Every structure is written in C-alpha cells, then in structure tokens.
Image 1 (cartoon, one colour):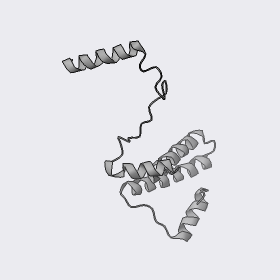
Image 2 (spheres, helix red, strand yellow; image 1 turned 45 degrees about the horizontal axis):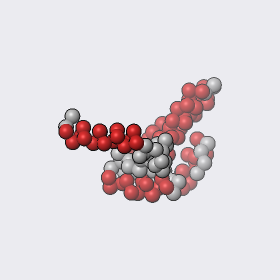
Image 3 (tube, rainbow, N blue to C red; image 1 turned 135 degrees about the vertical axis):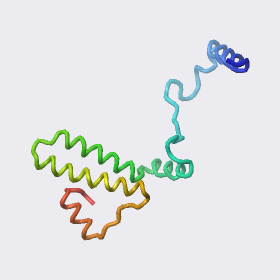
Length: 123
C-alpha cells in the first residue's frame, strides 16, 4: 500500500471514529449508480433519458419477452402450447438478432397484424 493510501485510510478511520459520517444524507442506503458501464459512452445519455421517462431500449424489451416465453415453454402442459411458444421464441430471437445488427424489424402492416394474431401478441 502506498503512503498516500495509508494516510487517507487513517484519516477516514479517524473521521468514522469521531462520527463525522453519521448524519450524511442517504446514510445506510445504496448509492444511486447513474453510470451504465456496459452501455457505450455515446449511448449513455440517450439510455438515461429513456430510462427516466419510463421507456426501455428495444433490445431490453425483447430480452424480457424472450425470458418470459422461455418460462412459458418450461411450464407448457400440452404439445400445442409448447409448439406455439417455441415458434414465438424463434420469432423473438430473430427480432433480437435484427436489433443487434441495427436493422429493426419493419413489416408491412397487414403482415405484422397476421403475425401478431397468429402468435397471440398485442400490437
């Protein structure tokens, strides 16, 4: 440990013993981490705005839906339920791969309605 680190640690310990940190706002609660280390720097502001407004990036929404469908497959009772859920999972994974490539799914409206009807999804 460097000398400066030891000095800093000693001063912090001394302040703790004196109770300097006891009445700080937010004491005992986790720190709100605003930084998103896994999000590229160029997208962090946009993601923060989306998150604060209650919206999620399309990839996150797709990943949640994929997780839900995987749970549905695990709980499927009949072969038909399982087959339908597997088809939906395949579609969701395909859409996720399109999102990753930067080519979001764009379907003709009538075709999108037929797909949604077939898989029982809302538009």
